[in-house]
Amino acid sequence: MRVALDTNILAYAEGIGDSERCDKAISLVENLPGNQVLLPAQTLGELFRVLNGKAKRTPLETRDAVLSWADSFEVMDSTWSSFQAAFDLSTFHKLQIWDALVLSVAAENRCRFLLSEDFQNGFTWKGVTIVNPFVHPVNPLFKSIFKDKNMV
Image 1 (cartoon, rainbow, N blue to C red):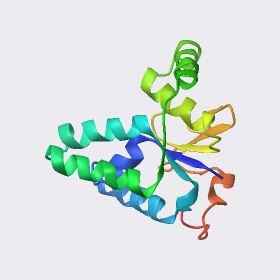
Image 2: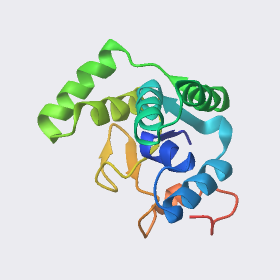
Image 3: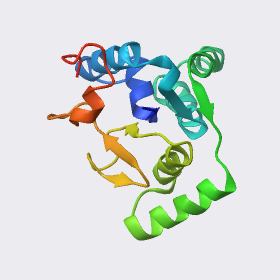
């Protein structure tokens, strides 16, 4: 099952935030099947902004971190059709446009889950279910992709 990661998961894995969420994000990323993890390009742009701005990393450090993520997982580009779907999500479901774009790109690339804390946990759109890995209970189907079922 394909899993997309939102910016907040990447930022926590980079050590931005409270230690509990950072540790959880690192553990998730390390234990997800790497060949099934996808990154919407939008999330990498947002991560660059967070690391350079909020975390005060240098542009070079930020660039290296973002490119490391891109080297580790497949990056999904935003298409015109994903933007059109994002406009609809924003209009009819009241999502922020950039969050809507991340979700629409995940759907366009046949992801089953989007890991994020920026959406309503359990919200499903076009086959993509939002999983907030920081709340319990976690979707049982999501648990099934881990070798260690106690991981989440």
